[in-house]
Length: 265
Image (tube, rainbow, N blue to C red):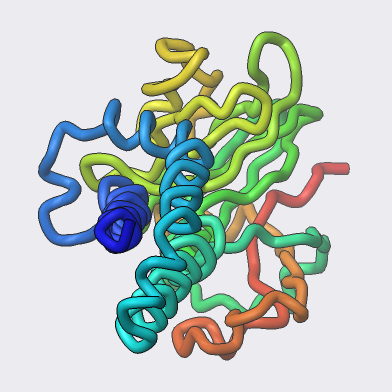
């Protein structure tokens, strides 16, 4: 039974590591064709955890009878790895979505005119999202011309895409789940399918093969479209943990800026 304890501890450590390794930018992980394996591990994560947890419980008494030191260290390592992989290294705990959109005038613009922005025009409206700040969130939910939009950006491949977050005729909620081949992936809340950011296509899960409607978008500098844009500010939730720790965003942690054109009267 002592061997059962240590084998189950090792198994749980390997599982939790693999569950993050295949969908995060770790050395070698993005070079592998491991999407199906990653989705399988993630989909059955609670089954694996329950199995290894029961095995640990069955063997823990025998392990402690043999030694108090090694079982204690082993359990501390397991708890540490589980905490890190699920609460520190998970994509949706590293990149937060903005919680509040606020329109302001262009005179209050704090963004340098040379900043790169992701711009979109639709139905007489145009908006642009500074990539420096968009990259922190990976997705921003907004609306344009009466339609909901999901503005996305992958900081690894530097690709910006704007989609209509509608699946099977219904509004859908997405969260950042990780990446595959250096491109971000999102998970829909309803079916837990995984969607590739660069194409808007579901690449794993029940909706595999479906594609989100896309809005044409452009990456440009703010100054290139400054005569057409006024300011739209996005205020952050100041209670989000860790936000102030990002040096690149400390100056703008209270709010960041996007733009839309003035309406002709």
